[in-house]
Structures are given as structure tokens and as C-alpha cells.
Image 1 (cartoon, rainbow, N blue to C red):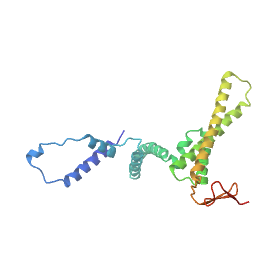
Image 2: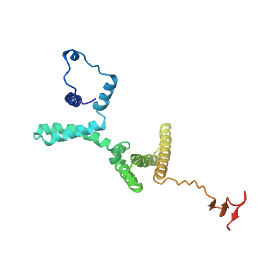
Image 3: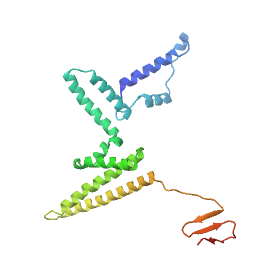
Image 4: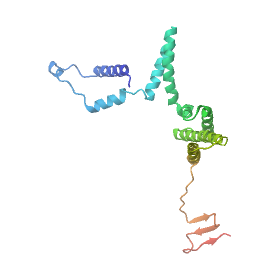
Length: 233
């Protein structure tokens, strides 16, 4: 689950650096006293050095190491083995970059429509200028919902050419219809949220002696008597 060699090398290097800056060598009696490692120190070591295989930093570090080894390898057998290892690592790397490549989104839909959802996500990002992770997630949600609408609608269209009906087919037809409606709601909700995020509504709080009310074309002045208005018509 984690890179033991990296952990060992890093801790040894840190301990070596600490020994260089430590105070002069203590007496023989003080050497016998061993300082216990506290739970807080263990917590800091784990957070700093131990990383799981699914950690993005760990995956990219392994990819860099494999690429460096691949560049320096000339034997065919060694290169073949490295090809298999690198394929697994780079597959994970592509998933990590899912918000930029949209490959992870493509795996949520059938193979036929994967190019479609990737292209739709990129077009939505271009249309609304999506740059932040939140905006990219909404663009992917829109593209994914659109892809499901197309895919489920295709299934519904196939029902128009069936020769007979059954309880099972009717149940499946009802399920697909609900999924189409759900995908439409997801698309509309995500699209509305993205529009609001890119173009937030303007709220004004005005405190003035004179205010202009556009709807009624009235001028309201605090200098007049209470409840008195001047009609501009």
C-alpha cells in the first residue's frame, strides 16, 4: 500500500540531518537514556512519508521513475516488461487527470457514446470558460447527463420495432423512461448551476434620500411628508 524504500531512505536522511545539527556528544550515562517516540511524532511521520498506492503524488512519482528506467533500458525483454508496468501506471495517471481529459467520465457510458460525452464536455467548458474544478465538474455532469439521454432514448426507440410485449419488457420500458427523465433533470440542474456560477445575480442594497423605482416610474423622496410620493408621469 505504500513505498517502503522511499520511506526508509527519507527517514534515514532526516535523521542524518538532525545528527549534524545536534548538540555535542553526551556523556556515557546520558547515552543510556533512550527518548521514546510520541504518538504525535508517529502521526507526523505517517502523514509526511507514508503514501498509499492510490495517492496521486505516489502514482506520478512511480510514473516518473518508470519512465526514467525505460529511457535507460535497451534490452528487448526488459523493455517488454517495462511496457506492461508503465501501461498500468499511465492508466492510473489518465484517470487522475480526468477533469482535464474527461476519460473517467467516458467510462460511465457505453463505448459507442464515449467520444460524444468527451466532446460535449470540452465544448461546454469552452462555451462557459470553465477553469476551476467546480466548473469542470459541472461541465462533466452536463455532458454525462446528455450522453445518458442519447443512450436511453436509443433504447426507447428500439421498443417501437418490437413484435410483442411482455411484463418484463414493459417493466424495462418504464425504467428506461424514468432514467431519461432523470437525466433531463440532472442536465437542467447542472446547466442552471453553471450559468449562475459564471453569471451571478446582482444584488443592490441602496440607502439614499431619493430613489427611482423603474416599474412604477415614481420618485420617492425622504424630504416629502410621510407616505407622499411624486409621480414622474
